[in-house]
Image 1 (spheres, rainbow, N blue to C red):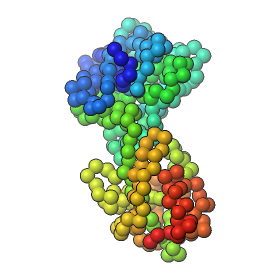
Image 2 (spheres, rainbow, N blue to C red):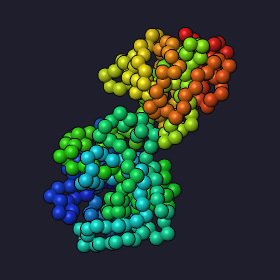
Image 3 (tube, rainbow, N blue to C red):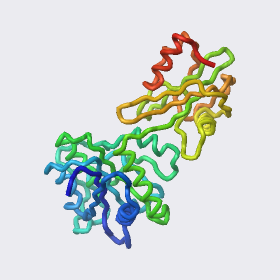
Image 4 (cartoon, one colour):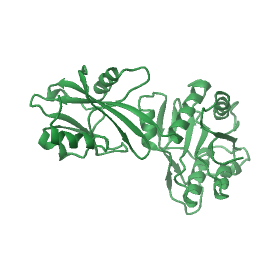
Length: 328
């Protein structure tokens, strides 16, 4: 079978569970289909051999466009994207081979933690407003974590860290139905292997002195410390003005009515394309801001526009405004 495809794995029933939602979701993904993404699926055994199946394939020269491991998280209620794999096996119950390990390294002398090679900031953007999906920093100590660590370790050892690999912990189907979880997995897959195009709206806001508002992205963000106009992605079914009004209320706690479009541009980042619209949203009271998502805000005159480090997509606009003036 060709390795030029996305690999999605799952696990069968283990312990005293009557089903394993990861296997059910994998089957549902196969039934629904993944569109233009070429996918290979694999069921891994719940033991040491299963945890090493994918890492062994990688060491034997297999290449994939991406790897998604699915596993059951019986006590969780949301879908969790695992940020880290620990170099630790710590079992509270035996695996399907009877193996029971209290504390042992997955790979001798391996790093304590390995971070997912999946595009974190792309997934951040994709699931920013999704209440069913969130990041986790703890993949546990059982076969799920062991599998994830072995895969990441093999990618690192073979200089294949450009291959995006992610572990997705799934809750029982009484928390989220299998079909809905499968659709989320397909969404994750598309975000990992397709170059996304984001339709983004931003607000040009003035204070009483004619200065414009810039906001600093938060410390946990992939573009932490960079500055931007407040705004965000247009969700499905929204107009640009509806999306902007929603985003401004969510980000800085004020209600605005976008007046007219002042800028429209497209910018290619290394891993995504942003189609940006900037709308004039009028003058507001500078003391009314309530920052909910940004670390800091500043009001900037034309002469102060370069006092902050703007996002790459904003720089051509700022450079032109320095020459031509800020539009209104």
